[in-house]
Image 1 (cartoon, rainbow, N blue to C red):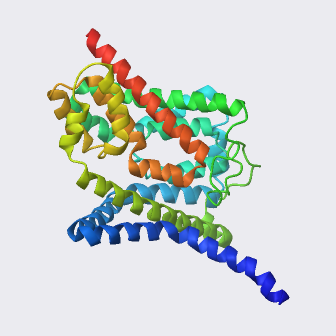
Image 2 (image 1 turned 120 degrees about the horizontal axis):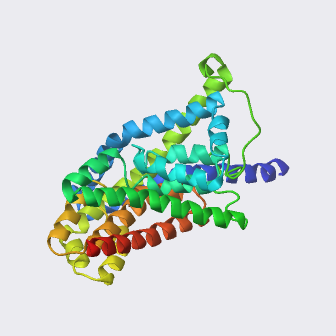
Length: 350
């Protein structure tokens, strides 16, 4: 009887852990099954869409996962963390600049974010990078220039860096008040602890593959990060495919048309559920502007949608504690509205 009593808590803990590990996959399967009941072709299209999206982001994911695993296995994470121990405002500025020019997509950058926080890099600098990264990258700048013009592309690039600096500064002020001591969820990185302090220095072993323990650590980190990202991104891409199928572009066009302050507010809020993706949204916004939508509303839509798109937001939710997620969304929406308003004022004066 005693053995049974002692074993029960362990069994419950194991079952709870298995449920937490598999519930995201089960949610994806349940959604596809429910859609298949009412619309079998759409279920198949959603599954194919998710698979294709995972393949298209695979290069960025593989690179970012490899960097995160390499940093942990070699001990180079301490060197990276030390690089962010300068003046807080300087680190925030560098984080925003790095996010604005980095080639990583909003999903591919997640392993790096987790690694940086686990290394002890302050959340303020990481948040600056986090907010700026989904808005602009080199290929996005070129495409935006081709679709919306150089002025719009340059303003969007400045917005990305500005939003990063704004968000990082706000988080820095909140941290000075004692907020965000443990930004990561339990079980992510180092269990959510140490996100605001630099760990004790350890020797760096660049040839980590010559050390069996370090090689094992590299493999475990890479595998766990890959499984973690795969389950959340699969769910995110399934939801995105349904959004694309069930929210017609014409509806977005009708909602975001018009002049004045209201379209900017509406574009900021509508950008969250109606955003397609960074590249597909550009011709939509171009068409809206051609039909009379204020440029400021277009900017607000692109910024709000880019930072809070379903894949990006779900990745943040899976990685960070709810308080960090709430601040991320709040900064995204307020920054998107401010950027749209400022861009509208600038265009009206020229």
